[in-house]
Image (cartoon, rainbow, N blue to C red):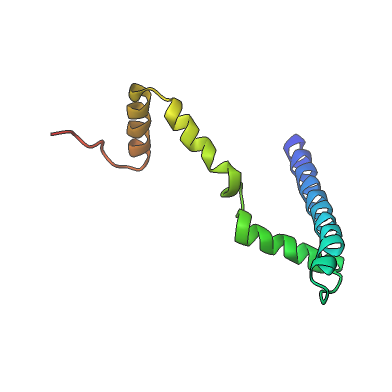
Length: 104
């Protein structure tokens, strides 16, 4: 029961975040674009949500991929010692079902 309540709470938080972001997109569009492009019309709320989804698809991706998230993995790799890197490679290869490559 506890997990179900947590899931419902997270789902409601996600819906609220999407609604707030749609409102922000709508407000920014209506404040900026008509002045930049004189022929542009104001955007209503459903169109603002559509723009938000479209921008996530084109520029941000989903599940935290793309954008500024990409640099974290590389920084972690650079901070590893050569021994840690080799252990990491071996664990990754064993998870993929491949035997580690032997050096000649």
